[in-house]
Image 1 (cartoon, rainbow, N blue to C red):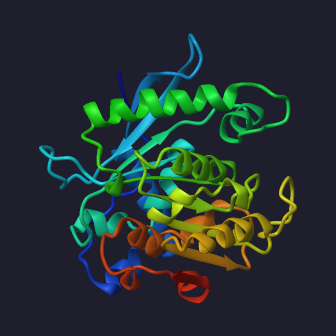
Image 2: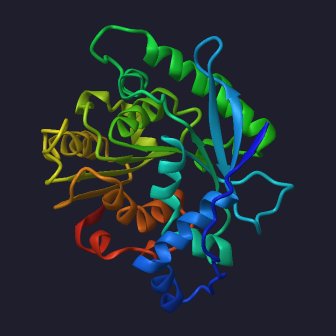
Length: 289
């Protein structure tokens, strides 16, 4: 069953692949128009959920100009439309214009309850439930095969990536480390429950983006980039291809959105990331080795 979002409020003009139009499309005024257009173009399929009798929406976005007869490099991004907003709002004009090669984005909805989301995303969540195992099995053995079968998602690990923010970043670390046969890398924004011990030797053969803010010590987050730094240091010990970004931002969507454009282009090998980096990326992001 296909769901269509029907709340596009602004017209969005196609942009050319120039620095001037890229900057204009990513202005404050252009951002709301881009969000509305993105949502209007995103398809959602009602999908059997992790638990018996449960359903989840799995959202799919692909550029309108993408060929339909071949598989596309794929990013699985957690938290549904919120995840799509983070990874796509600033880059969508470049995909629409063809300046960047087409990429498929698959975004499963999270558990609608905060406790349920945490239990599904964080291995070892307090309470000892098996929600993490059930959700991981659902994602790996149902969502991904469905995306490959029906959406022409990539099957080559070198073209398949996973990403998330906060506890979604924790989940992305586990999935990439536990399933290198599926994922060639991960976009990890502000993990809060991970540690360096989660990084396995196989991570050396994957690509990683890890970000963390020194102003994240608020609300339920009290570690002020300590967790991302531990993950970064563990990845550095493996000599994995790594883009790390640590700087003065809070634990929130706009910060992750601003740290994504050049980082995603670098992670997926789409183009020269220099042409897409935001000011925070230029200041705080560094590639190694």
